[in-house]
Length: 411
Image 1 (cartoon, rainbow, N blue to C red):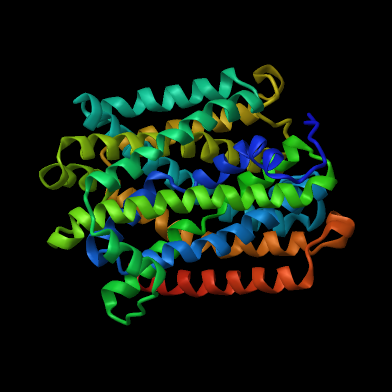
Image 2 (cartoon, rainbow, N blue to C red):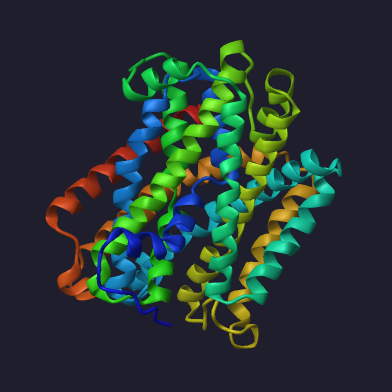
């Protein structure tokens, strides 16, 4: 499947075809991230809002590299490793991606069910199977382009977080001050929040999906610059959502010393402070984040498994020709529902997802950097040494964050 794009790199072309990149970036704002940001906002108020902005160059570079890998190699990250580096490497990457995806799917299914309960009044445990079936139906019924088209409009619903931030009536002068002037603190609360924020946003499935999108799309390599800019634009959208969530929870909960432990608690706690409209808007944003992240998490898991076992795979493939691929999608969603209905608490799922992410993200990110510099896979389009240097610095930072985070989580 090839999309014919104009070779011009002007703003019109950039924005016209930026939908997939925005979806990839927005998928980083999944419910586990929303919950983490709610905790950060309620415990540190606005003091880490500058760190949210710092995510733009960090995540933007990673997404740009993943975009180039998909374009130049014609393969997603897992398939590139399978084709190039042998059995041990592919098993290591598989083990680094699939468990964290499954834990995150379970946590996101629970969060999406909680959002539906807040909006409908129906018990969240009853809503989670409905949510999983809806996501499965989307992935079974539509091809790759159709799935992208649906998710592109769901991204707009994330603006509900912006509306919730406005209803929270923050002190905008204070917000801007903390956003533009970094505040460094060695207090345990701030260090924990910093580690959690970096750990939950630098997550593997987001750049895995970016490479999948480009491999499926197969754009002309003359569009490398445009595609990289689109990838960065997707991260700008995601970071804006992160910032709105932090401001909304900081202005209502943080300034009053009301700490929360999940996105559900944050939505419920908004009502007595900012009114029922803010609660509903936050719940709508939570539901939108679930509807974006769940299809991508399930699809990435299936792409990885398909590459491992050499199955026919791809959302553009009919079900009858890619039964194993779609079976993995269905099984991953079913496992998420089972974890929820059997009584595993959402906060436990969030902990397990964070723990798995802390172990896996440095591994998958390291493989991304190795592939991106591989001349046999990338040809003359491999990333420059300077880009590689900055990429490996991010890997080192994520590794350090993961070590500290895991030490605190298991200590």
